Length: 251
Image 1: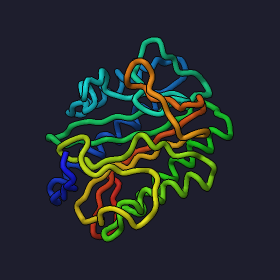
Image 2 (image 1 turned 30 degrees about the vertical axis):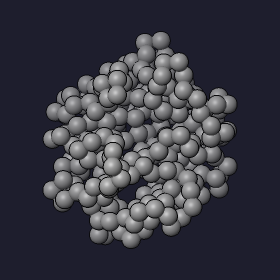
Image 3 (image 1 turned 90 degrees about the vertical axis):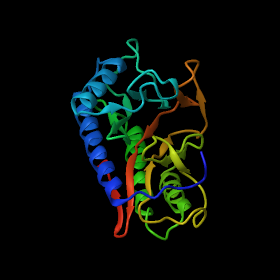
Image 4 (image 1 turned 45 degrees about the vertical axis):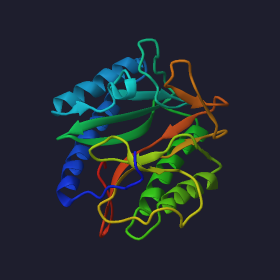
């Protein structure tokens, strides 16, 4: 990968907008179906079914060898949870679903964390702050700002509520490839890095933890969990930088 941030044409952004809306509706449908007693494999099969019914292809399946259409991560699992028949969702869990699709050779990518029934107040705070941090980051995705202004806004929102920011996984550009330049950290000082231009399209995706920011990868080579076993939440939107401000393509 070179260090060039690709600028999308209005025609490309129109395709990405359509892709984002389809993915948003897929995640909404999966969220409506989510309940205690389901396996994470069932969540993955539902995600795949809705993607295919919409006339798209699952972006994650086979990507770098990943075996499923969705990443389904529970509680202390941060990201990249491999769906399994043995992993059963329980009341009181939080479930992070990260999914992507391909529409007309362009990619969409988004993630959401969903509580199952009633959850503890501290965990609810984590979910709320992670969502807020995403929108604080998006607010900085404007023409003339610096890339790290996004990163800094996420970190300030998280740490103001005593949540920690995962360092090992980051947001990214997106378009004809699932991962394009730049990498978008969820922490760092403001006013650094490339200046944002109209036509850039980013996936902004904070992952926040209740305990330490440190993570470990499990033996399956994919599933990432918090080093201290405390809960983690993850939200992601695909965002286009337009003249009038950021447009969320996966809203």
